Length: 169
Ligand SMILES: [Zn+2]
Ligand SMILES: [Zn+2]
Image 1 (cartoon, rainbow, N blue to C red):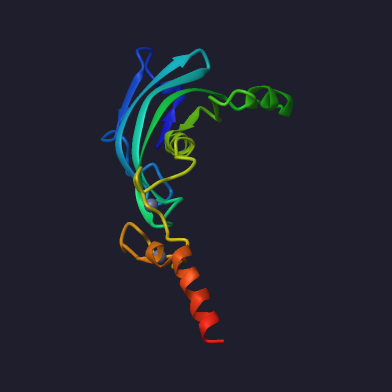
Image 2: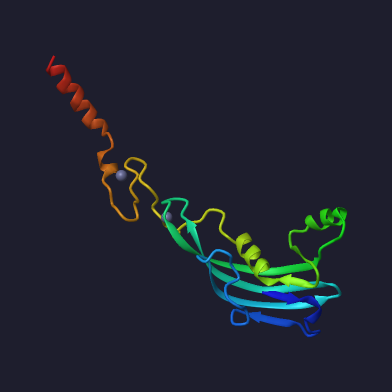
C-alpha cells in the first residue's frame, strides 16, 4: 500500500488492517493479525507509531518443528526522504529507527514487513517448555516419550557384566 506523503492530512492518518489492501507481507504464509498505525507529518519526515501483530512461520530451535510464532512489533519510526547523496545515507543509517521514502511515496507494506521482521524472535521456541529432541534417538520428546534415558548405561550393570565376563573365562 503506497501512501502519498503530501496527502497525509495535518491531523495525521490512522491505518488499521481494514484500511490496508490485502496482506502487507510478500510471503503468503505470514498472517497479519492486527494493525494500529498512526502516520503524522513532521515537515518532510513522516512519523509512524503503533503496533503490528502477526503470525509468522518459524522453526523451533529445540525440536526443529515448524510453528506459527506470534509476533508483536511496537512501531516507532521516522521515515525521511531518501537523500540524494551517499554521505547523507551513511549519517541516517546509524539510526535504526529511520526508514526512507522516495518521490512522495511511502510504501507501508514494506515498512510493516521490515518492522515485523525486526520483531521476530532470535531463538524461536514452539513453546516455552519445549522438550526438544532426544540426543540418543533423535525423537521429538514433545511427541514421543522415548525410553532412551532408561537405557543409558547403569554403573551397577557394568559391574555385573564384568563379573559375568570373568566367570566365563
Ligand atoms: Zn519445540
Ligand atoms: Zn530417545
